[in-house]
Image (cartoon, rainbow, N blue to C red; front, side):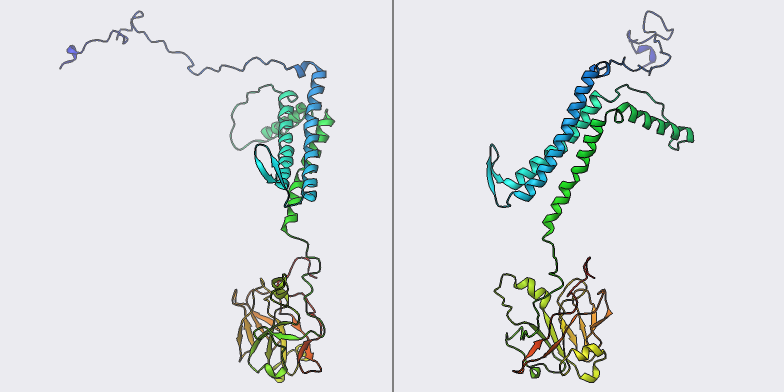
Length: 352
């Protein structure tokens, strides 16, 4: 098929550019700037009484946020954890969770609503077009940015409207207290509980396997014996808490092999008693090497020398195992001569 056989589309412009049949006119700028719409002032821009009403509304929202935050704290302190209430249409819910969610939601919503109302009614709403610029800003641009910031702060009215400023600062200052209050759920303060155990002068040393009091002859050279204090029973509700601090291990070493003078004084006929709780992260120590008198924590391989004050010779543990001073009572049983002289287990932030 030749080019002569192709019918000419009457809708296409002719090659001669006939003005009546498809001549195409090209605009000088196909993407012309439409400009900005004419700015229409708001009622607050021309009526100071309306501006004052908006200011009071914003301040009221910020004040309501502060009251809701106070309500959050009061609910957290006063409402029992196990209290259940009926809320339509949700049903039965925890009173504490409902109160906390409601008060915190109101506190955050009022801050946001107040900021939005402030911006829509009192801050400047004049649209400004700015040309694009390079990422690296020259000194004059930096100066302009700082000036724009100052102008924006001035146009926001934050300096001229102290009621809004002060209530906003109050709301923002109180809201973080909600998060601080939640830290209470980390648990009760330890007070002096980490520094003391149930060991005391005169308490018998009980074999944890046989549950019988120990005599010196029960602890053989090279053996490792696990013990606990007299009066601590496994069916007690706080047994795990107490044994986690009072667990003891006894090793008999020849007195001439003991290098530390205090360790020798606190022992009985070469029987030394040390805390079983590793000073790294609190794992129970259970491995003993007879020839070297080393004990090993199986969790992270911290190694302690029981013949030299249980000092750390390897691993991440930060300090030696605490030693318990022991003796023998009138009936020939091993007993404690007091509590540990230092806190048992890992270090903690307030340990002196």
